[in-house]
Image 1 (cartoon, rainbow, N blue to C red):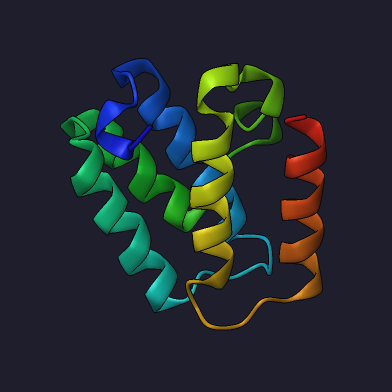
Image 2 (cartoon, one colour; image 1 turned 180 degrees about the vertical axis):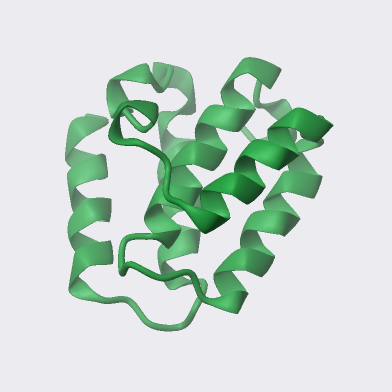
Length: 109
C-alpha cells in the first residue's frame, strides 16, 4: 500500500503520528518540517487538515491523538515505514526517537 492508497479518514491520523515522531527529541528540524509538508502534499490533505498539521508543527499532537490501536491493521506497515522515514529525516537518530519507534513497532504487532 502506498500513501495515495490510504483512505481519507486515515490520512490525518498518519500525520499525527508523523508529527509526534518529529517531536520525539523535543524540537522539529527544518528537514523534518520539509518532509512533513511533502507528505501533506502527497496525501492531498484539505485546507482544514493542513491547518491542523501546521498546528502540530508548533505544538505536538496530544497523546490520545496518537494511539497505535487506532491504526487499521492493513495500514500498520505503512505507518511504521513513514515513522521510520521521519526518525531519519534530520540525519540524527537519538535515543528517544528510537525508543518511540521501537514501542510503536511492538504495539502494532
